[in-house]
Length: 314
Image (cartoon, rainbow, N blue to C red):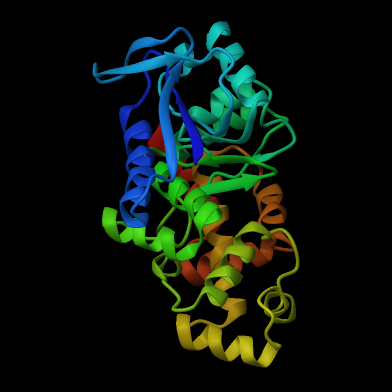
């Protein structure tokens, strides 16, 4: 039995709790036996009022030992009160795996659990997470990220994506697919939070091509030629290219270019990094290559997207 705890605090977002909880609950229904022992935890226990006013009964964290600790998102000021931070730090010290949903990443960061790690959060506050915790490598376009036993996920409903990934890690891909069917959600949402290009809507038929795309998303700053992608899924370059084209309608090189444009788009829209720095961070060898890719895919250069986002903010 896998023991999981959801850490709540005043002002938590209830869907950050209910979505993943429902996914773990569905796993038991499919398996025909309990797989996860779940409980709501809080600093002092008792009823905890969420952001919408709903009350969730919880148990005091104390010295609870967990297999998985999940910190939900919510009110940034209330979650980072010293007592909440201390409670999460203590729980994480005795948990085999730690995760956050949405803005829960801020509480993990405040507790020192994300320093030196890659992490994501809701796209609207990703720039703030990076600004306030510079030791964290924030990657705003991911639905979820796992880095050395610490998992973070994007906004609100991404908690379900996170739970599906945790279930897959614990019980295999078929169980995760079954839970997704039970919840009537996608097993794996392609693309990142930007969700704007046709590539983000692709659902390759085989795990090999999905894994290759996931590998590419996680290694955008690095060289991603056909040989390297093929090697990650144990195919020859020729076999891989044919399979990739057949399942996606794209060449691997074209798909990687689109992924890099997606990642750059989010950074341009939601951050203040120089264009040259963004180009390097997402794997374009120079800003001119990124400019040509943007013009080809969107009809405008990166600077136009940056100006438009600033004008909207003003």
